[in-house]
Amino acid sequence: MSEAARWAIIVHGGAKTIDPALHDRNRKGCAAAGRAGADVLRVGGSAVAAAEAAVRVLEDDPVFNAGFGSVRTSDGTVEMDAAMMEGSSLAIGGVAGVRRVRNPIGVARAMLPDQPVLLAGEGAERFAAAHGIALVEPETMLSRETLASENSKAHDTVGCVAIDATGAIAAATSTGGLPGKHPGRIGDSPVPGAGLYADDTLGGCAFSGDGEAILRTMLAAHVMHALETGGTAHEAAEHAIARLGRVGGEAGAIVVDRSGAFGIAHNSDHFALALHSSELDAPRAAVHRDELKDILHG
Figure 1 (cartoon, helix red, strand yellow):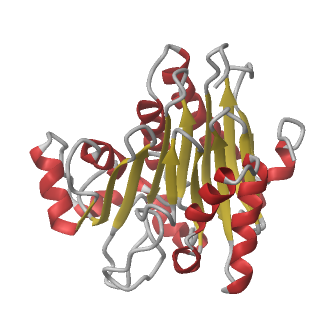
Figure 2 (cartoon, helix red, strand yellow; figure 1 turned 135 degrees about the vertical axis):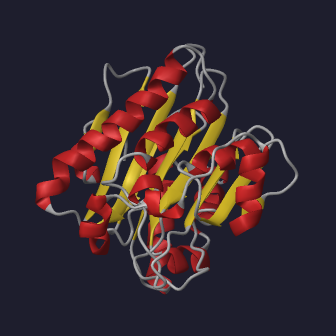
């Protein structure tokens, strides 16, 4: 970060094909999330707090497949995954297959100071309850809107990367899974090196897309390697998406490097996005990277 104490935040609401009738809702939802995170950073708050605030907004918006917008497994249940990584100490908190938590990202953040990196199912819910996080009935996680549109939400994972005025970086992800997925299926979202990563010395990233393809190619690890070898945030994002050529599938990447520069790449038709920084007057939102090319480098 520069001596001017620049902060920056970028969020995504999923790499997928978005119905034109929902373009504005995706832009507005992402903009609201970016604004919530920026409000934290503007007053000197931490990247971790900003990332959690942003992802909570997306989890509470049923247009996105996370939290309240989660979809059902083949058993008709909801199983959610989320993760948070803090780039100063490389602390990680991840939860998988949780059913009774309204905002899984809050549990992931609560795990950061603890020893476990990843907790699943009932174990994650017991951790949440022990740390004062209220549990809800699983059926309350399904909105009317979700039940009507869940088949259009296959890759609607949400994510965020933030860098605060001290140069600390955080990455976060949250997902409601794939419609009709096999019970117990875990994708890339809670897996460091695949769905997300953060390191203050390099930058941070978060992904959305075909979870199995992202896991097989460890896309977040490739972003970090590209940054380590001198690539820009844009080059690192593009490099990771190119890796999918080996296995197929679609994905989207958001990246922030240690200077606060943004990188975005996706091979999906659309990628719901918003970004904000100390150099912008308001968040900029989009459903395709090209809508933001005037403020992106590369």
